[in-house]
Length: 284
Image (cartoon, rainbow, N blue to C red; front, side, top):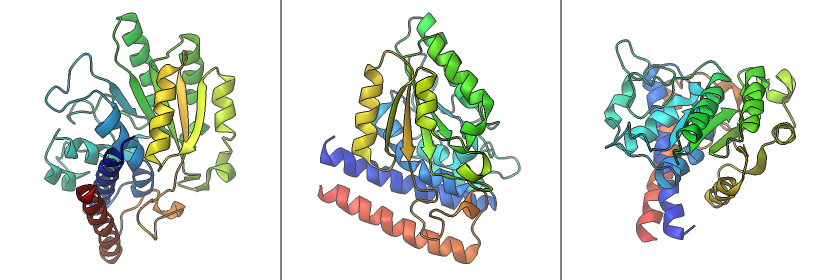
């Protein structure tokens, strides 16, 4: 990866984080922790890897993205807004009565959303169906999906894993946001899904484990996954609440909005990070 590309992606991720927290604050509800932990992965996919365009959101040959951990849609919505699918100002209507930006992705009403998700496990299952449809139609598009580590406690995830391997869905690349935390605490204490990598390998997937905040590692993993002759999963170690000091590694921020004073602290930190990223990108 070229240095300028990495700096650009850092700027996009910083903006995704800022917009996501701002949206949750104005909604007075939502899921900031996981939205922040996937920001770098989402930035890489939407601004470097995927063949998608806001000018042709229904292009039959576009790559597909399914946010299986649908409650983290603030990060997805932020990326779509930055990419021009809808105005950034609309993010502040998240979860408001009458807004098209509901608390989980809605493919019927949100431009750029490829699959409605929310019930954990169903997103990766839908992604498998998209990948199989693409192969049977002779299409070259790829399907990307992000799952949560807590989501991997769902049996449906492993049914999907079996399905993908059986049908040799080498056009499917999944990411697991392994931030170790879910709404009730450490995933290993709630219902231990580990070892996640070994489980996917046992189901016949190509498996890689990386730092989910390192763009170089993300790119290398995606490149390797694209060469695999089987479905691929990238298990990404991340920090829940990444970018907001008091949210980091704190499961209490899985599903609540910051209050006014907390919002001010978060915005100060996120704005500072964004300005630093912009300056670095400008100076190369």
